[in-house]
Length: 147
Image (cartoon, rainbow, N blue to C red; front, side):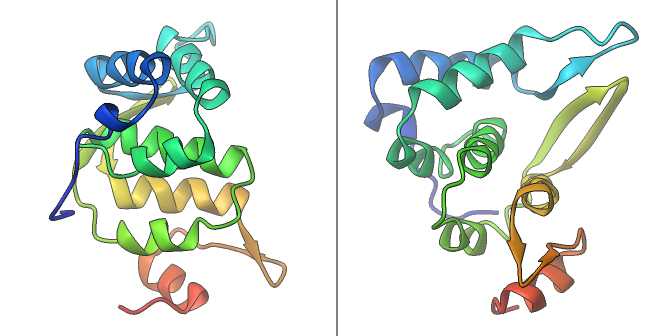
């Protein structure tokens, strides 16, 4: 678990803070299409508003939020906005073992924040023409991070 998490919503703009509070209250990471009909959930719509409203610095601060779901959405937004200085945040969260709930399609699962952010990283970050693997040890080796 991350040992010193701050309450990031106190250091971001009010519109961003309002969106963060909504994400934390729902407390589940959801994809763009869920359920049998593939509807777009309100939680995902809130995430897209956060991604559009928050500055890169605010998103970086939110990677240290007290709520694991908010941390996951902050990383996701940083990946999708092509934030190039993501490695220090990834290093800081490799042992983030808070369990979060996720829903993509019809699948509802539980996983650690670290696992979620590494899986998402695999979709967005490439190094020397290879993507990050799902396995944390392999990601550490690939990124040349300390174990």
